[in-house]
Image 1 (cartoon, one colour):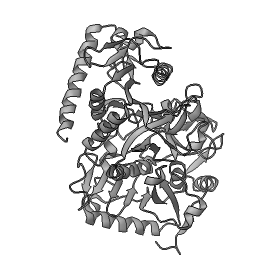
Image 2: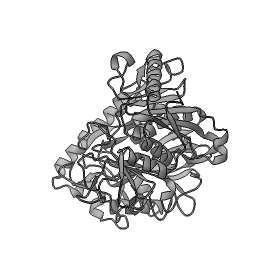
Image 3: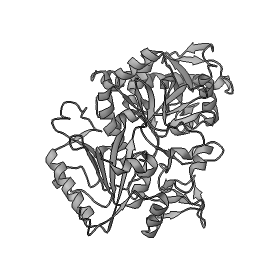
Image 4: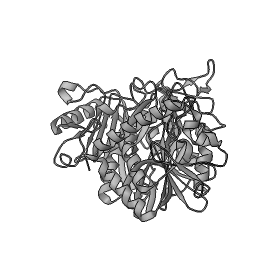
Length: 506
């Protein structure tokens, strides 16, 4: 990179990055002092445009599928040269050195090169900041280049269209272009760690985690929009992290240094920790303001339903620092059931846990990915298929071993609909979901009388403190019982079909 022509802004603080973003007309400051930006055309990830360089290291190890698209080494090299040439023409470039993985035994050093100051701001919020001493001899193991203004030529670069995320495990580089959506940075590195950590006998997980007063750890698996961030932000427990974790022989650790929470319909009443984290230093994406003010309208969906805020972990009142903990005692699989047939909470034995982990059932929430306008039924292996470079069996077998050695209790929690499917039923209230999870964590459901679900075989508690009994059995919330069982059987068939498909890779 030509340092004479291009000014390098290295390791700037939040205030400087905010001022630069505003000066460049790329963002504004709201009434609480928070930087608010728009990420342009892309307000969600584009999984179809994520590529992995197919070479000697990846050819026989990566699970090539619609999320792991192969790209040739020569295309990668041409694209890297072209994107660096593009950055060399800019007046300014932002560089930031960071770490991933709170456990020092697995820490990874990363250098980010950003075209825009808000990209560096996002990285500062989401990764782990080195100390001044650590920066002196900082040597990046991985490099991420994020250039939203650079668009690929599919014929020349081998991409699907102008936007792209390309990972080269051999060169330890991630190239991101054509999209200003900052989530591509976060999930690009998560995909890398999902390749690296299992090779070091660490289960990498798309989950949030917190720790109780007695040191008991809980994990919350689920896709975006199912409640990982919300439900792990519990004022009675210390937050370890909201989205990405590793589980080693020593316990659980956060991969990140910040949170990236959805803020659509956010309220101080129901999600006070996230609401109060929106202040100076946080970064809000793709929201609207109340007319005539600089007050964020969290109900506004004009831009996207995937409105987001990134902020450092220490913006939450109660956090675990360092963000490491012991082996989990409770594991919650969060599923946003668009069919409205799953119980709000049920117990799983280890075999059922593997079945639901492999299926990873939920509904994609509108806006999380490009083209998703309303919840859609989906199966996502291990609750994170778009980020898994290896076969799902790798992660599933690791989870099975850990369940057998730790005796962690596993629960399936429906944060979706009851009384009918999407458009007919109603969304299960956050208050009731919190009550059920709190009861499980406190051991109040251990001896509860349970009934076996007639279709799915799940053990369904018949009572739970703070929750109406009629809510616990989903069939009771449906007006037409026959319609309920028809919907449940149809969904069960889809589960079994998907499970058989997934087992082919075992």
